[in-house]
Image (tube, rainbow, N blue to C red):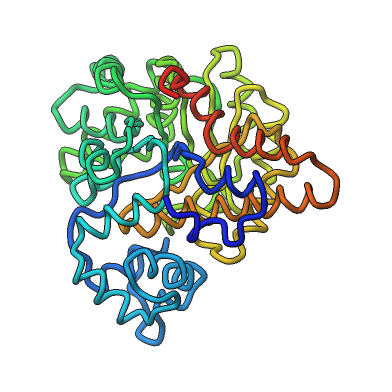
Length: 390
């Protein structure tokens, strides 16, 4: 991995370590498997799912500027290349080569790949491993499993048991689970496990609606709670999207503080909860990670989209939580630019925050190196049981 793209002017051990740190991207999706025209590319570098207004381009954003600055040189263009030139170069190289170059430039040591969103449009775990040359481990989305069981044909009474059986089967080789309850309902749900009767009643309503429409999107709060508690019973680390996302979320309902009662109820079960992304509630997530031994968090998705301001976001994430409770993720899905930039901006922001404290005499440099390694690599290896593969 070239240090030119990541550490700027190398200034000592901290920068050298960060430049070559084999980050564990503990929540990521596959890179795009096909060619991307300008229109499709621009829709994939925003969290909006609406048509892009004719008067604007997504290249005029923090993420757009970061792509032109940092990804263009990886593809053999000058920094700050014009959008037209950048996209033409992308087409010239082809999807496979773009993925290879950008995934290599990210310097990720291993990917924990969440496979539950539009899997046919992106590389699967085997495809990501081939494109990146790095180990890839699967994280299974709870709601997708529940929806697939419903679509396979099952009665309301059979659904809970069949779902638990399928979840166990699907996660036999997985390292973690993921829930999108934030998208489907928000965090203001009844924290208690749902009773058998209310699950069967809710399942009956959902299955009837699905059979009539052919759509199997689970958004009933009772069934979402069934999924969450089944995940807890499974015992694997459980990831929860929190905060910023596409318009499917109602952001004020995605503050992780709304999970407090549920976090208290599941604490005796010994399951680790990974709060993903969290922006603009990252300080709230830091509080939860401080007070609850089983809570961890990252600022993944927000890093790419804040671009040149991501240094501030990363520094704020270091304010309250113990450093053993913070992880790295990119939440990249689609264009491999998101995978590469997630790593680059994280290295840069973490390095700048820690360097400032070292230079001010607040920290010793060797301690800054140790903390950077914890956050970038070691915490994820520990939480997901991957230490033996370190």
